[in-house]
Length: 404
Ligand code: CTP
Image 1 (cartoon, protein in one colour):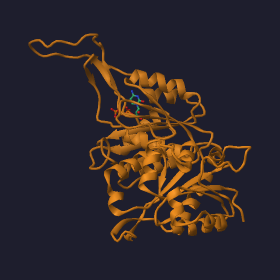
Image 2 (cartoon, helix red, strand yellow):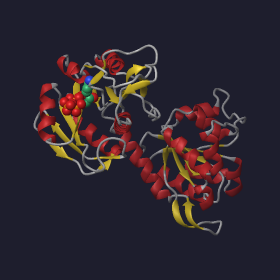
Image 3 (cartoon, protein in one colour):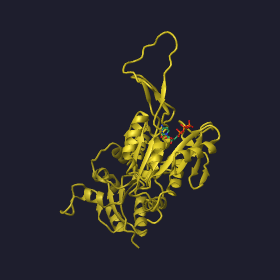
Image 4 (cartoon, helix red, strand yellow):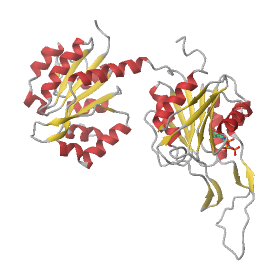
């Protein structure tokens, strides 16, 4: 039975092209419509006729051979695809895509498509481990492309190691999983507003007060919300992290700027997650020129910043509001107190005195408390996994999700 989904299979040149033939057959048998595009080198290994017969569709390889005068083939195919799968993907084709090079039909189509791209690399073990290839793959992963890892074993070149194209069954499983997840885009048409990172409160043009937050937790939350189909705005204090794929990023510095940015987006937001470590105090005076040192001590008078979360809680209408709390003791008592005082729907607390939790690291262990009595203590997990849990738990407070 047809799934109604279109897959464009891009076959680039390596010995693993023979596996792409089996993959084509399996994709078609699983009910997808599959069209195959080949590079010149791929055609040195297997002829287009094989792919044409297995896919029951014409095979494309020449940008300048226009079979249908009413369209431009590589653009039409780029638009036609619900998913593009590059298998096998050579080091060369990965390098071209990572660097925006379009010198044949596959590389041109890959730049022209807005469909998600899945890449199954296949190459010699040393090529796979080469820093240039690694960097290109990292870049593509940052763009949001998905990778299907190669297997380990005896390679055609005689070496034993990592580089063998994943088996057709594994690639098909990844394709099925992709469409299953896409169908679960539970946050489609919902706006999610996330704050991340520290704020900087300036004393003079060269000095400021700040904290150790890196933004990792908030950026992971933004990525997780985007993968559930949400329209995501990430308001971030200073952070070295790159904007997650598909997410609108607004950069701010001070608590005041964060307040302005958050308030301007609050009305449209359905879910707000305030993971930023906002300064509670700022210098009462900010000097326009650098303060010169003098004999003796100096005291800087500090004043309170606006508690953004509290303000959001005060004016909350349809929004689901999730706060964060960094505690060092009595986690449950302090977190539940903040939940109530700030009129939140849920609070995510971490005990920053514990190893592996809190600032700077890649892991976190959280305690979640909901206004309905929901409680959860997570294991020590990656911030990405914590983001998924936080998001999943927030959904219980969003109206109308389950009826969709
Ligand atoms: N927060 C905020 N605006 C501030 C300060 C904090 O929006 N000016 C938000 C943070 O983004 C976080 C939560 O409030 O979601 C943290 O609550 P807060 O009461 O500031 O916690 P602590 O800083 O740990 O405060 P306390 O010293 O009372 O424990």
